[in-house]
Structures are given as structure tokens and as C-alpha cells.
Length: 102
Image (cartoon, rainbow, N blue to C red; front, top):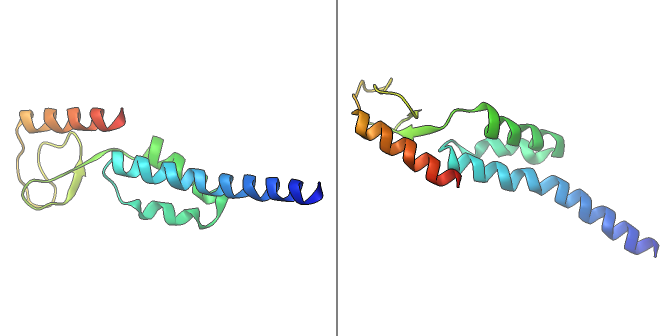
């Protein structure tokens, strides 16, 4: 009976540790940002913080069609190469982001 309780305790700790990493990576892909944020998941508490920052605190990104750098989703001009994007391209990337969120 004691071993069963220990196994349940260990399973809960592992679940508590890996759940934020799994969902943090998912939201990093949705928002098109680096998965390296989840390296904070080495410590369980920091993994939860990184997950919450990614989900609620980081703006979604898109990739510039010319220089392939990550820029804000609603940006009209790339800050790296000064490539101007049409309103149609911006609306398309916003729609793609909304689809990834579902």
C-alpha cells in the first residue's frame, strides 16, 4: 500500500513537471516563437511561468517573406529589411494564426 502511494506521488510530480512543457511548446508553435522558452521547464515552477508568459504575454509573430525574420503579426513593414507588406498579406497571416489557435 505504501509503494502504491509513492508511485502515485511520483506520477503526480512528473505530470506537474511535464504538463507546462507540453502546452508551452504547443503555444510557442501557435504563436510562431522559439520553443527555447521551455528550457525554463528544467525547474517545474519555472516551466509553469514560461508557459503562462508564452500563452498570455508574448505577441504572435509572422515570418517576413523577404528576410525570414520573425516580426509582429500586424506589422506592415519589416523592421529588419524594410519590406512592406500588403493589407492582404497581413489579413492572411491573422487568419492563419486564428486557425492555429483552434
